[in-house]
Image (cartoon, rainbow, N blue to C red; front, side, top):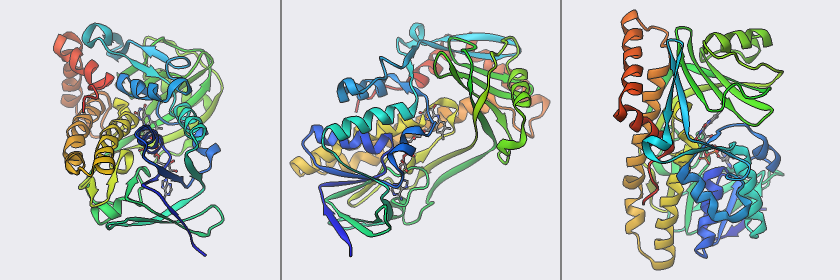
Length: 391
Ligand SMILES: Cc1cc2nc3c(=O)[nH]c(=O)nc-3n(C[C@H](O)[C@H](O)[C@H](O)COP(=O)(O)OP(=O)(O)OC[C@H]3O[C@@H](n4cnc5c(N)ncnc54)[C@H](O)[C@@H]3O)c2cc1C
């Protein structure tokens, strides 16, 4: 027997996008139901993004003290670009008067879930959407944790179900329909128990490829190095991993410690051809993905949600469709700026497998142009800290 729930907005996916959207809707008095195929434990323990733009932190402030981004997270006022063995600081505060916060995505999710449950949100874990039926009264066709049929009938459905979205088909007509680019490399990510090797993130271009030295806390660090997309995480011993990392960050002695997690993160750029059809819209990774180099993924998801929440408020409280009609165009401007920034950082910092000597020298020329030009530094700082959320 099918269980059917009725609500105003059905939200598929309890990632940062879906959870924040339900919060912003509730602030406007609009009821929603959020489902996620994963368990709460799994959602709260998966390591992903770590950099929050200033606008993201400001939006998270609206959930009140439940957001620990400012109290537990760390404000960073710059990053280091390293090439030819020398470090060059990009000073965000001096260039654009903005900052980013280092605060892991799974902690953001813990905060959002705690706030949603405290507010009495209908948030269901272990419920998997199979498809969305678009129409005047769209429906989410799903299965609950026991495999029993479960449906949500709503006035609007939002697909915030990540890069393998099932909601996308209800908007674009297929699960893949979009602009797509794949890159010939990936990141090998490690989490290790060690003190920080630097106060700020180091983005390092070296003849052996790219590396990123990032931090998590006083005792846990996150680091990445460029690898082939088909790399097996078991292919390296712990000593080999430290060798690979160290040779890509000449000039800084990395503080080593036990590596307790490894993953390979493939690089893809994607933007769905359509972001809204009728009573269904896409946000976050369901709508677009970026390579991780510019730290834009989660921030872009949150920027979409801010625009969509306003549009849904206008639709559901005032019957006004104008903002919803404008939603794809409004968010596309930021999405394509972020696509450009992520592609630019990626191509400037990584060694392409087929790079010639000319390509390598041109890349160093580009890096030098950025660090030696006020405009170059300002562009990097502005895009990294995030364009203001002014819509
Ligand atoms: C290793 C890694 C590092 C990253 N680093 C950064 C970074 O530094 N900065 C940054 O901004 N971004 C980063 N990103 C990207 C960032 O994590 C994503 O862009 C962000 O999670 C997108 O949020 P979302 O809510 O759109 O989707 P997701 O976080 O993917 O959430 C989607 C949710 O939908 C659920 N779901 C999926 N299908 C279904 C279904 N059929 N039914 C029900 N539920 C479903 C999933 O279980 C999931 O919980 C990184 C990503 C990875 C993988």
